Amino acid sequence: MKRSIVIGCGSYLPRRVVTNNELAKSLDTDDDWIVSRTGIRQRHIADEGELTSDLALMAAQRALENAGILPSEVDILIVATTTPDQTFPATATKVQHQLGMMHGAAFDIQAVCSGFIYGLSVADNLIKGGQAQTVVLIGAETFSRILDWEDRSTCVLFGDGAGAIVLRAAENQDINKEESDTNLHTRRGVLSTHIHSDGATNNILYVDGGPSSTQMVGHVRMNGREVFRHAVNNLAGIVGEALDANRLNSEDIDWLVPHQANRRILDGTARKLGLPIEKVVVTVERHANTSAASVPLALDEAVRDGRIKTNDLVLLEAMGGGLTWGAGVIRW
Ligand code: ACO
Image (cartoon, rainbow, N blue to C red; front, top):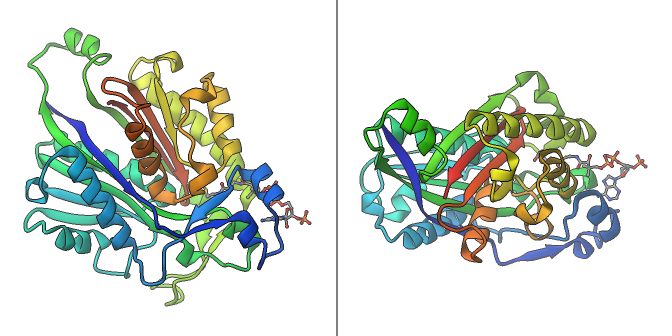
């Protein structure tokens, strides 16, 4: 049986930073309200003409450079995004071409803020099943393009960005079950992924448009309180499921890298886990919620600044529209 090892990561943020005070110039809001409710102080916003594929390409190039491999070595390229450049073709195929990847396959995944975790699950299973040797997984969003900039209850929450990882197949030793169980706690790579959705909650977080319904792109609509309630419950559930599947306790976790939606949700999840906040990678104050990009952006930051080190046990989790939610456990 093969398994997937993370061999590199990278990220990219648009250069334009918009602070809460700047938003307050054209919107009935203020820095105090936004910081106290969400922890967000600023967000990066893509320039006019800067597309999701541009952000994704930068993140992928940096991840490949970090991994020390060439695009020609990649079999599969996945872009998790809710804000594709066009309805079709998949943004991933554009990135594939721009990277100079002449073979393999590229496709998008749409699970909103859980997209990167869904992508991790697909990538890991493609590698385990022997269909891919090397996968580039990108989370990339220009979420600013689907915001209603007159709706203060949503537009202050989101930002743009991209993050990527490179996964590569490694052979497991030919081991028996008992050894395999012991090994679970020491071997590097993706230990497990867990994904869920509940379409009955479509209407608490959605975009009011689309090619089949309105033929317009539409804007984000959200019942914030309901989303908050589901987030706390679903994330606690998925984190428990991921720990149980690996027979781990929360004390075993070196780093929690959560989806960066809201500081209060992050604090609540850490509290429920009994994990000190120092073990949680937090970027929401600077990046806001970048949807599918938020987990790989936070991962890349913590790897590059030396917090996440080889052999650390890293727990990823996210929840988003659908509702969708998921988690992944990686021995880095
Ligand atoms: N500035 C000032 N006032 C505001 C703003 C703003 N930006 N937005 C809303 N308000 C006002 C409302 O109009 C309302 O005023 P009213 O009482 O006069 O009607 C008041 O603030 C309270 O509004 P609520 O929506 O009840 O505020 P709440 O305390 O629930 O906070 C928030 C809103 C921050 C959105 C919260 O519900 C939340 O964090 N929900 C989770 C949503 C989330 O993170 N979504 C991201 C996508 S899903 C995901 O990624 C997990």
